[in-house]
Image 1 (cartoon, rainbow, N blue to C red):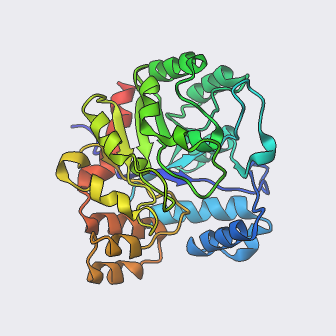
Image 2: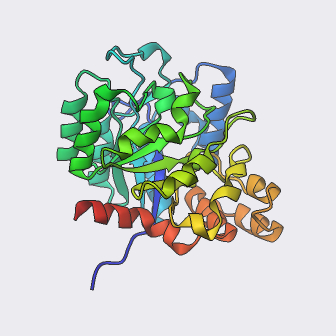
Length: 328
């Protein structure tokens, strides 16, 4: 008899300050970013002082503890590359946070609950070499934010990169839709139709946030994404950050039973988790919002909200199923 599938949160950010020698760093250059940073740190139960020093260890230990104390079995922890020009020149001055692939790989060796995801801009001069290192290290997922990292998936120079990913059975977790947290170079790079080039190379792709809106006036590409499901059997989406007021509008598109077969569970941790948006959009009963809001474990709170909204049990195990299929 085969091993049972794990319940996985496929979208969890690692954030660090380099205090453990990780090489990770972050910047909060504006009053809004500093306020957002404080909200996120407080929301996941850490002391504000960790924003000054010691964030590496505090963040990771807290995250692992939350996984163990939740109904989840594992989380996909994400590295974060910086933006590059198409000619391979790094746009370092615009970067707001960075998490090295090697750091995430080592975390996954230490914590059984962590599944490592690398992040490699395909325009990097060492992109293919770095991809090989991550494949060798057993990192099954690559995470990219094309609109924020300045990546046009239609650029033919990247085809060998996608082809090698497909050959290795790696999964691409790609941001789709709008974005307000970090700088956006080209909002059109968040259009899920841009993923066709990657899909046609044979890569399994998860469209993060289901291509929905973040800002008030963002384009809504979720229906375009859903139409693509019938053409691309390797295309999926996640429901990350949809327990937030600005993204809850996407829920109406992906909750129907005929769509849920392509949806995976993701939180976008440490993005704040609230039932306000889902309740306001009519997808959460008041009594469920009130009951679940008292849950202090952020990952568990997101899990419970998603269950109460009607996401089926397969949503939470689908990522593990995809990984097993890729490894066959």
